[in-house]
Image (tube, rainbow, N blue to C red; front, side):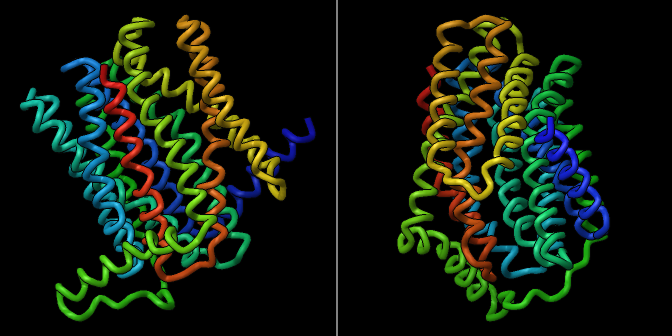
Length: 383
């Protein structure tokens, strides 16, 4: 009981601290819309693909979306190191809104399936801009270390809650209308995120790389900055170990994305809205796992990481053995809690590194290096 009260007290304190800084508040509220839209559209396009061509099409569309995103992520992430970060956030939100609106129009008008997949891939690729820029802008908006800590905690909670809220909203819209409605609503939500960040202003960031030397020079500089994260991986053992563990986790997530679609349609007979509901069950477990991570501050992470992988594997194995409507959400929730614990290496390792002007680029490189195995896992589950 005391732990619950302490957690609620911390929640109130985080909200109060972030609300006291208008710039941080705007950035965090915009980030809520981004995370919800990311999850809702991802679930929707997978459900649409299954309706078109079954599990094979689901695996294919996942690879089609993640392939370009993985290639663009390192370059997109360095934009926050070379240009004003509020402009990068605004540009990312507008690009996502427009690409999702185009996808919605294609879905509603029964456009050719390759066009739908291409527009959805464009939306997924534009998403790679936001998270590194968000991570980079928070230190420039925070006026005190307490504000920065509160902002980082708020971002973490937003990501966790969105794993539940995004698929749940997708399930509702899929049940009422279809994937076109999901993309249309998310396009409007991201437009609101863009409006929010128009009120964000940051000062000149010390060490921000100037955009000079002509277009070829700028491109070469962005490539060098983007590859800086991979250079760090080659030199440093701890980041390399972190990315290795994240790669394993991404492989499991990639397989789960396709398996949840098959489970909803073929095993549990829940239809397209069931894809969202099952993803929401994973998200509910992720929220519980996030609450548990508060208790791990200052402790060795080996045991919780091993426990997380064990919970993930055993829960998914049990779903295969007991594919019942009553048991599946509970077991998927346990898998979601374990999945959060498996992310601890990625959450702790980058944050342990000293801040540099290429922090956004390093974040994008680390994340991009783990995406290809995720796409491969999705493709391997196509049959």
